[in-house]
Length: 85
Image (cartoon, rainbow, N blue to C red; front, side, top):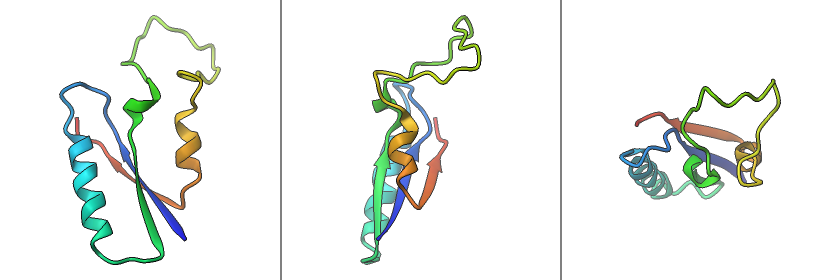
C-alpha cells in the first residue's frame, strides 16, 4: 500500500492549514484509490515551538517532547506539504 502524508506547515494558533489538510484528505479518500492511504501529519502535535533565535543547537538535532517529527513522515512513500499559515 502506498502511504501519502499530508503535512501541515504551520503551528500558529490562527492557522488554517489543518482545515485544508482535513478537506484534502476527505477529497483524496473519496477518489476511491484503494491502494493509497492518506494520513494527516500535524507538525503542531510534535510540540514544535515558534522559532527562537536565542536557542543554539550547535549543529545537533533537537527532539521535541521525545518525538522526532520526521519519524512518522519517513514511513511514507510521498508527501503533500501545506504551507498556509
